[in-house]
Image (cartoon, rainbow, N blue to C red; front, top):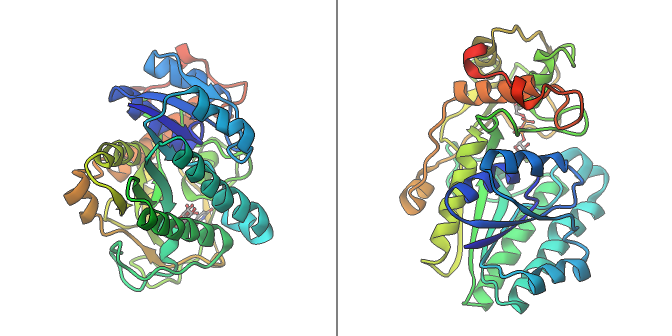
Length: 351
Ligand code: UFG
């Protein structure tokens, strides 16, 4: 199938592209490179040994974006393009409502016009807000606590109502828990443009010496060691979940939603200890105040995806830490210059 991947050069998108190519799909990447790097495309070509069609277009530029539908034969869309920082969304809600909500509506209207009826949408466990129960099933109450989350939920609702009105569409929403790790080649991974907000890229940058220590946001939660618990999922497992979701689109019409998580929660300290174990590098940390907006515990009930998509996460927390570290160690500056060259890549056995 020919798959249009919006945001395909991003952290999650790039891993999805590899899995799509390796399962025989043709891909077209559309990305405005606002939070990604052109070098990703070179790396994807090196890993897959395939020439990749990529179009440096902003999906919000409707005129430009429409040309993609005119010029390429597209069977399905995996839609990841959007902004994802909770903090930024609090400071700039207009940007989030425009990019995440309005541009998704425009995308769906183009899909409708050009009769592309299959969509996988990248949603987030953020739509559960502070969960009432863990593990969290897809049927849990939805509520959001910041503009980023609200735009994800608004898109979910829009897609639901759209699917009610148009029975030729098949739409799957995937609610991601906490994707971490990197491709085992060590050639692609998470490369935040600024000081990382998220735990794993922060840890890996402490490990390279780029950052002096980790701030652990609170050790007074009601958890086994007082630190927050999350459902960390290897980004390659997450990518495989997209391929399964995509393949299910042709079997069922309408709107469906799935959690993509492992179903297991780990505390911040457990992640730190596991990282130290697999890398052999101590991670200095300080306990600081709780971060505003953080919940104590969040992990998925992942049974629906297993039953209906025949998908389950397979990689362990050790795999996640090892792969995240290999990526960061091979690419201390992310995709920017000054990294170790391909011939000098460090493999697991060298660690
Ligand atoms: N944490 C630290 N120090 C850090 C960064 C994080 O202690 O420097 C802790 C957090 O307090 C939390 C855990 O590590 O307990 C995970 O934090 P992340 O920032 O990695 O992930 P979040 O669970 O806060 O956020 C993720 C996504 C969001 C999404 C949210 C809910 O990044 O986009 O899950 O699904 F909205």
